[in-house]
View 1 (cartoon, one colour):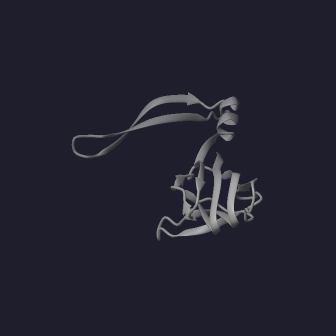
View 2: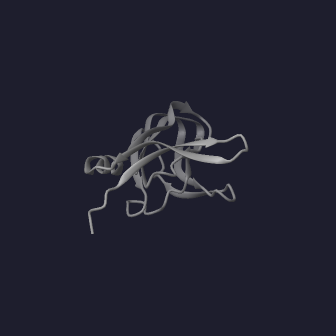
View 3: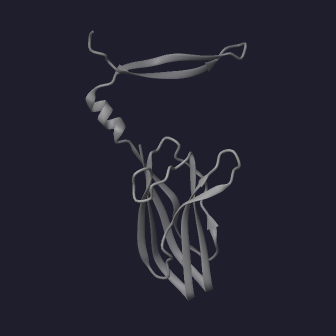
Length: 157
């Protein structure tokens, strides 16, 4: 028996005049060891929340991570004011059926300037699957609190 070759096929999705879906190949390439290594190391940098002063609780928009196996999330607090200010940040995953969110990870409460990070995914620090959509939720407490912070992520295949 001969050696097998692996191919990458890029398809375009078309709809004919009768509404039938047609898949048309537009590119076929042999998968080389170099291409396989590059695909295995694919990542995407994501800005979840831009750096801004926040005085009330809230959440980010959902972001798609269905293709990713893991996420590395960084929370960076650069300014804090108020009396006994607190900031709680957690990463949540959306149930595609009910639309409800479940907790993936809660960072240690912030009361001062600082940075925390976490790897989330099967076999990592937080050993949980990501699902297809995740978001960051934050709760701000204290008297006249203000936190300037950002949340960034690296999604990895």
